Length: 404
Image (cartoon, rainbow, N blue to C red; front, side):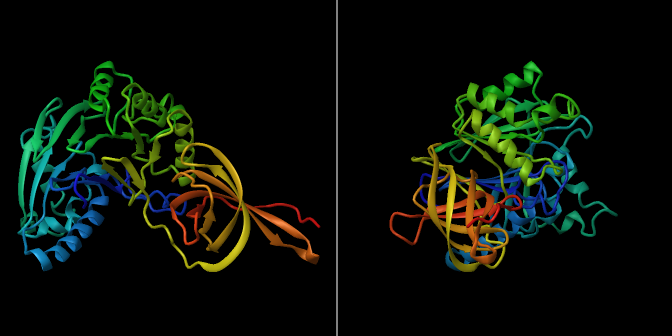
């Protein structure tokens, strides 16, 4: 990692339970797990949902490449657990680095009134209890150090300042703020607004943050009716907090397992109308803090083989500056899931485009095929002064009547 950078990566973004369904896979189906890497500094893991398995595989492979050149110093990380509900701990038995003796982990969370002392240690060991798991906890050969913390605590880890606050969630939940030398990240999932004490805690924690990762599991309508009291929040509350606390970037997180990708698209679109610097958490997505600010990148999303074709299309959408545009463009290749476009304009990641393709119809008459798409990649293209834009189609095509 370049010097003076801090990179936040999303390995699991769902709440409640993992899901892998056709209409949810674009944002991802693993439960909560984030990674924060600080250049020349500490490594943090935020929550241990099913996304922890993929993070463990990544760290294991990365470490093996490193040791070939630098020797075996082992992996060391600080694991911050918000609370003990299954969607935040169920990845623990599947984290490969726990089973390697050269690795060291510092684990933090609060003392549960239901478990008493050493709550986090008990939770970890219970994941390996018979008959629920076939491997005994004694097989975990890494060094593990447990620290019980409370809301309001603060401490330093190799130049990064960590702060905590109690959030409003059944059986307790901690929010975390990490002030790195290059910027600040606030992780505030599993929080329901409406209790002044907890609302004030969150606002103090979020004040002036570069990135706020916030619980947006439900719609505002659900939060005020059928999901009231369930311990979660919505995009509208996230927007209010971001505005009040002068947050620079808001990331909607903890998507409901029943929320389709299209529903999350709708939450994001509505939030951006109120707070433009809003993103929707996606597996593989990263937010890199540097002296230039916050750079958000989305994962590789080429899911199927693409046909090398060239079509003339009309594309309309919004630029990174929020300006509406419409232009004639070239569609360079296409698959059933998406396409690659060459545009003069530079659209914003996760923004929506309308792509209209001219298609040959019967008896030499032409027709148009109108597609809705979301931007998943944008970089300088192969042609001069062009942007290469990758899009993912987000609903079925609309065919318009043939014309002469």
